[in-house]
Length: 165
Image (cartoon, rainbow, N blue to C red; front, top):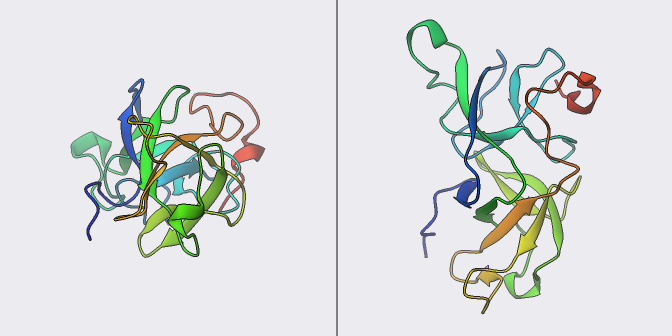
């Protein structure tokens, strides 16, 4: 059965704030992909060993903003109090997942899914109805990004936490 949610990460509820940033010349991310900064502070897709996620792509890297904003992406910030939906990656048996469990990011086709591989990026939270954590029909889970993974897009701190090229 197809998911009622789009592939990748989708913001369900919580504060909504966006920012624009230059896309790395090597970036191939798609809408819904968690993003990080490269060493030169341009956007790249977050992967399993990423230590800081700055946001989620609101469009494909190939579909940059028009005119003077060519090469720039619109990004949904990752903030406290947000609930996101994504798919649980293999090899998870959806009945084995529970609220409070932390998961990392794993690539599945063009999209990221929550998986037990790599750095922990998200924590599973209960669905609004409280009856289930995972939709077994489409493997969708509700998650929040962990506080120590949320990267500040406007930070003047060292870029070392983003060191990913």
